[in-house]
Length: 81
Image (cartoon, rainbow, N blue to C red; front, side):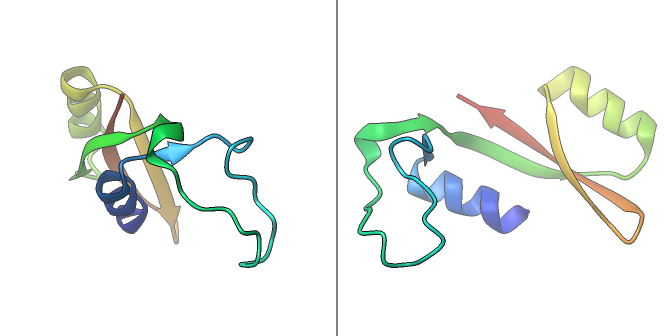
């Protein structure tokens, strides 16, 4: 997931599915257009797996996006604009 946030931060964001539809192939002919960005990530960081620390980070920084691997919880803070 960190790689996805890195890409979004570097590229400037995401377009809507309407503007950049999933085609299931790399032959869609669609090109990323910065003028069509609908959401962006300005910052992210790793968060402790301790639930009290996660709660404190949510209060301080806002919503979390996370993933679960082999029953271990790892979370990332994302600031969306």
